Image 1 (cartoon, rainbow, N blue to C red):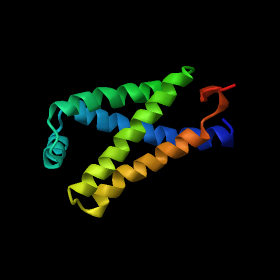
Image 2 (cartoon, rainbow, N blue to C red):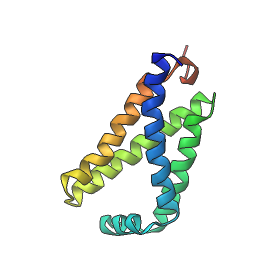
Image 3 (cartoon, rainbow, N blue to C red):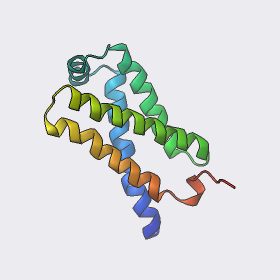
Image 4 (tube, rainbow, N blue to C red):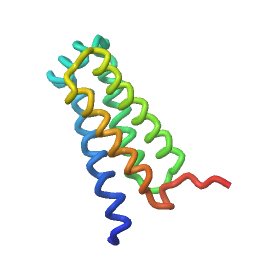
Amino acid sequence: MNRKHLSYWIPTGIFCAILTFSGIAHFTHAAPMVEGMTHLGYPLYVMTILGIAKVSGVVALLIPGKPVLKEWAYAGFTFNLIGATASHAFAGDAISHILTPAAILCLGVVSYALRPESRRLITP
């Protein structure tokens, strides 16, 4: 694997690992996630929706081909992580809680920017 592929796969792997663990924690209603969602004022059924969406998005990013699906996954993660950042900010949380989803979003932006041609949507 050459340097260009590594520069894509390392941030993408970390990004996907974080979102997979987060998605599983949401889907299984792990206690820290329930506490966080309750603190932010969201109904707990949203956790199931987010969990399924996150794991599905990770699968979309990791499978070969399907560039349109990958675009949708990156967009969904962007909306989710911007929403999480804003939710923590509006709830008056500590800066570490605000910056964590923002940092994960930055990792996603790096993944998106460095993706190889085979994973890009080709426009005329």
